[in-house]
Image (spheres, one colour):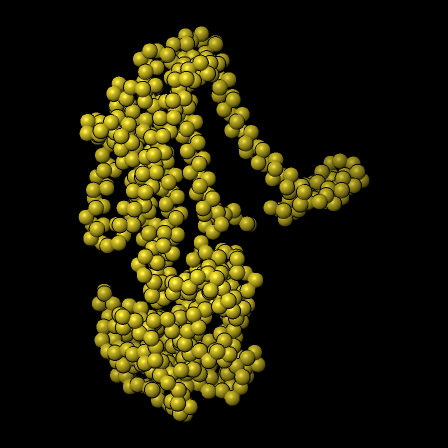
Length: 306
Length: 279
């Protein structure tokens, strides 16, 4: 990056030469060439970083402005489409209702994700131990995965001891599979020569798992985590929808339904905003965990140097 | 020491007398290996490697030289014949335990471990603590000139340096037998020559026994004091002969007439081995 700034700056200045007054422009290009390029490269990097934050922010602000304009110009009644101002207002005024709901949904999502991580990782380790275990169990996990969760949710609601438990099971079933399949893939993609090496040094099954297979499958596990995190939230919401009025007093999705029935559209939007925020937060968190665990060694976390 | 095969076998033993004095480390007796897909990878191979030898297994691809090396390492059993490691510790499954090290064609490092962590691996698997192993790791890293890179990750190293880490990992257990499977085939010529010199220096300094698989005549002739030429389809020994030189094997040897003659001799033997395969 430094060298590229070093190379491109002077020619860019020199290009101006023929059009401007020749003497002054040469002076200018000289001073540009003498600039400490490390600093200018750092400045360019900083400008780049600020821009990447500002641009998406501007787009979002523009969209909100457009929303407000559409509502005002077309005079849309608030029970059909409230303006952004009204949504913010109900976000604040209904905070006492929305916050507990947000907390419930967050709890279910994170708990199911944690269970899916432990379960998915654990079952994956079990599956790769022997071909027979895999042959026996893998089809079941696939069937569990391909059956739409919304179709099993009513059954789970009947058999689970409580609505909360039912929601947890639904979210778990959905988040479980991507973690499992990624982990299985990871455990199977270990470098064969490294396996030979471990065998040569007489490593036990346990040592091979701890020192070789688990670290080698970490990048795959992290992919599973990122996918599973998003799916856990979706499944939690779907399960709450399926629970309907049985989920009274529970999470954000229930508040969403309730607001729809009451034509309290601004609260619906406020709940939606919170759900989206929660999703973004989970995405950011899982991405960070993935970066943090892999950045020192894995190619996916490295910048290309050239 | 030189074993008859169904094909032509070259037998010359001028230097064998001095080697006979030392003890055999590995004795293969009519070893055959059939892969699970039915391919006969190795056919009735017999070879005895004695302490202090630098043996080069030379041959075209598919001649079973890597298979032979793996068998010597105790990796992935044999179909017929017998293999014995007379003076090594043998574990419960009848395989050598701890006296053999292996260097693969790829560096085969764990990318999530530092250089230190990678070299620590064999000792860690033996149950040594990081602290107890520290001195031996430092010594091994010093012997390949990488003591300043202990905390670097493999991705930060060049191809040659990764290979050095791999060699340091092989040396850290102070093995008696070092097996190298085309270790420098993927490196550039300059790095390869440098590493060849380093391996020779290690061999001279430690008295370790080396079996070095390669398909390069020049590498064979430069490094080995005994060359086993192998033949493909099925993999078997074609000839087995010592290679002696009055000169030190160094930069001057590379340009010497003696080295040129050695290369020509080995080369002739190899083309004979490869010619036989068409008949």
